[in-house]
Length: 465
Figure 1 (cartoon, rainbow, N blue to C red):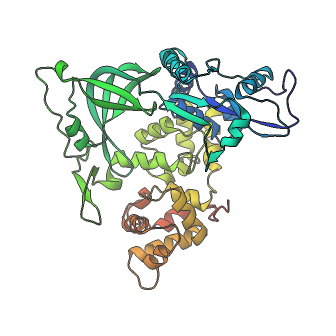
Figure 2: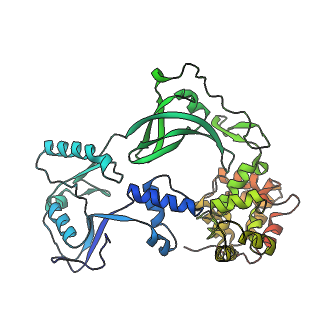
Figure 3: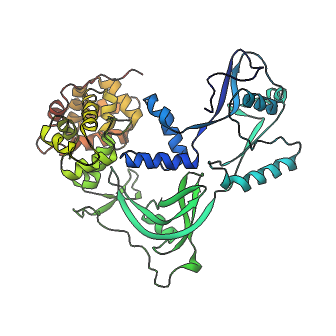
């Protein structure tokens, strides 16, 4: 292990807090994504997200299965001094059993810093893990103490970033994806290319205006980089290599879903037209519907164990799950469960685990429930503010419905007076409550009736943490 359970060597203080960087190497990242994809679980866009997501797992047993690595580079609390220089301290950390980066160097001049920077940039592609720069530190610890901090930033350390790594590849296609809120996003499908140790096949093009501004076309050779060494970004086309029969990309005017609903731009309260085009089909759009379902079971909402995106999509395509209530109905539908047991990839154990995961979430804190509804502009912070105020789902729904129906005395004013709930969030709640298919419920059923039917033992008390 790169974090020892017992310290080796000698010379350590009675108490020391060791600090460092948790990361995933390129090989470990590829293996984790392959395993997750095979299991129908979420794959990660890059090693940084994978490492952070692994550490944020609620279940530490899941974190323990991830191939995380650790470089020690600093310390916090310590009971007595143990070194006079940064270099000496790094050597001691290594002797005690911690992994430290072997590329660290000690230099004695400004030119030495520049030489070390150039050397690190040269070996960067061969490291097997991502770095985005170097950090220069004053070596003497007494000088570090004298230099001190500006707020939380040390005066004795300076980060110098590397230029983003770039590559050329072919833009083979442009697809459009429809998100939970109806936003239609163009995605570039690229001939696979390695950028900074990561194979990139897709990159967002953001919106129609961005495509027009960059004038990227299908068939173009494009310059690609990972912005911040994380997000794949197309800088633009190589015009000298553009095919003779190239034509500008025509952004669709209708949603790619079977309903072919028209796309529309929104206008802000100030009368400014936004650049994002949205499908106007709302809950009737199957693409938005499946994204709502994915949001409903996401980690920060219902977080149903055993029900990942792959399984949910399969259930949706079978017609088993069209609305959140169907998830809870499925857990008690013996006919469907019997069919599921005979499906490739399933068996008695996996079906039993799925049922247990669903049943465990029939009771859920109110803030998670509100967040799981997927109301536009209602994130975790606003969901918590609403839950702490209303305390029960009945109170929240009654207030939202009263405001939506413009009944006197209740609703909109009560919502707008809440701390942490701005006017945009209030309008989003009202629009949601007015929609006949809110929460994807059948027409004619009220939201409150639907919840009592689908989740009879819903724990509607807000969490206090």
